[in-house]
Length: 138
Length: 71
Image 1 (cartoon, one colour):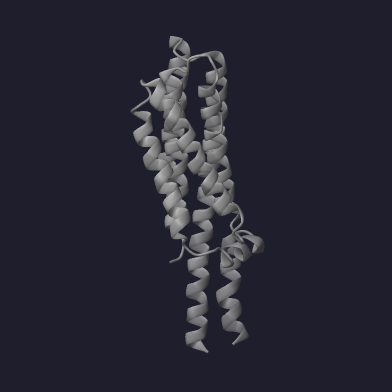
Image 2 (cartoon, chains in turn red, blue; image 1 turned 135 degrees about the vertical axis):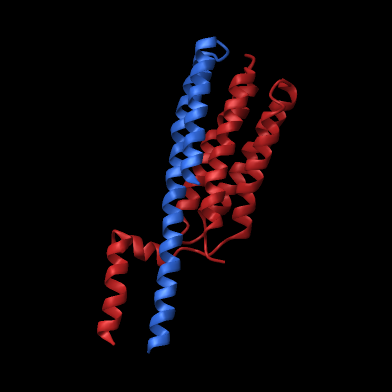
């Protein structure tokens, strides 16, 4: 029996690169519908908001809405056990959104090019997070 | 899938550089967006790591099932 176990586990651990990676993989939390929904919402909202960048008034409102959603995502993910990767992705998305409402709160005008690129990067970051979470065990 | 996302981030970087050249972005906007590019790349790298862990977990589960069947 020991030989069978060694035969099965040793190549597996070598394939993992490190024992730590295997350990973290073993304790990886399963698919979390709420977490996934946050990523989908951020992706979808940013896609729609990018199309509204010509209107500064609407964009100023959108900036607050998307930042609030990113903060919610981070606050939700950060306290879950063994959830370091998702919490790190949520923190990074929040980092991208945090300057949006700050910039619209200033007196200087915000360019449409900045607005479009900002939402495009939020879309891409959320898409990456969504794709990874979709692979988790259900 | 992550490769496609990374390529899209690179395409966005090129768009930002075009906007800088065209003068449609202010200096501070451009600096902020260039920092955001790095943050977005970090998200995709982390996502790749998470995806790999999910694959290893599936492999571990399959191994445990196999061992249970053998014993």
